[in-house]
Image 1 (cartoon, rainbow, N blue to C red):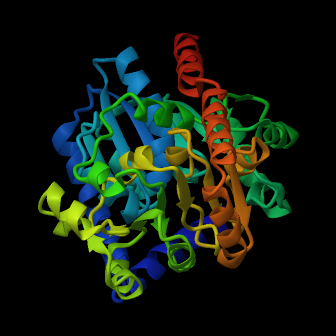
Image 2 (image 1 turned 180 degrees about the horizontal axis):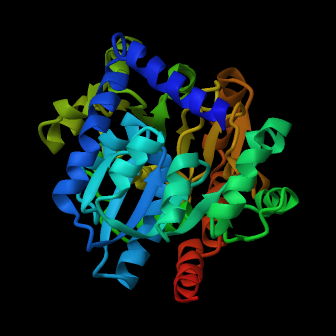
Amino acid sequence: MFFYNLFIRLLISGMRVGAVFNYKLKKGLAGRRQSCDLVKGKFSTEDKVIWMHAASLGEYEQGLPVLEKLKDQYPAYKILVTFFSPSGYDNVIKKNTIADVICYLPFDTEKWVKEFTCNFKTDIFFTVKYDYWYHLLEELKTQGTKIYVVSALFYETQVFFKAYGRWFVKQLKKNVDFFFHQTKHSTALAKGIGLKNSMTTGDTRYDRVRKLRSRDNSVDFIEEFKQDCKVIIFGSSWEAEERLAEMIAAKNRDVKIIIAPHDLKRVEHLKTIFPAAILYSQITDKQSLKYLNVKVLIIDCIGLLSKLYSYGDLAVVGGGFHSKGLHNILEAATFGIPVFFGDQYTKNPEADELIARNGGKSFEDEFFAAPYLLALLNNDASLQKMGDNAMQFIESQPIASQIIVDQIVQKQLS
């Protein structure tokens, strides 16, 4: 316990020092100072609250289907969403959501946690995937909150499986009412260290991406850009994916390429690689695309990527050619197109499953990927088959959020 508190103090100190040089850290610290005021302004001690905590945007998207169903089940309850990461907070705060309050999670000290949680009554709390905070869970359990973990993912290198992490396992056993795991392997690992209150429910992200197909996915000017050509969507691209796009563009003059970089700061660099490309913001009318015969379109705005996949014939998703982390491959697969990515992904069981179903493939580097994709573009039957496999992979997954909510409702009554 001493070392955990020391870790938290070092974390706070490190972020304060880092904030001098890093704008995101500065924003995160400033946001945490406002968190207590936000909940005081929106909640009272009489309010019953459903609280979802997500480390960042990916975890938020996993938890959202559960949160929405819980709100349907308990319409009178208020909704709190907290984040640890500025990237998650910044993305969600701009959207219309069901949350009454969206804020940063205070640092996990006894004082800050008590000051934050005393402003309302948390009836249901769930954290997503693997973001656990000792004092937060301890305080909520003391207040009588039912605590759950949604889309839990345990793996062998976690602290829980080290000798020095056993004290935290005891805390989880005491305070967490139930773990809903993404995979059978995760469930087995949890039960192996004594967390018996566990079951495999699957990944809630499949529920969310299935819903994407039923909305309006049209994006202005994309049909005119595509015309009768095949289209590759490079989603959340980094340097390696952009080099792959360059190789494909040089070898196949008929394919159309849409690039949505992971960071809009990369747009200027992309313009140097593809000087003839057009920026999405530059399109003024449909005729401009037809007459220019543009081959590469660079998306220089956010919020379009998941819709753009509906226009693709195949997708290359960024983040897998280095250790930064693979971006969301399910948003592409749900539209029935094969998905390709680098092989340096970790903690992404869906990537291994998609490959096993032959709905996608990973590569050591972009130079191995290029000839495979070029050959696939010339083989309509194989392209269609892989796309069908990707769609079937998404459809075969359990409706995890409904299973989880049904279990939570039962446990709330017990």
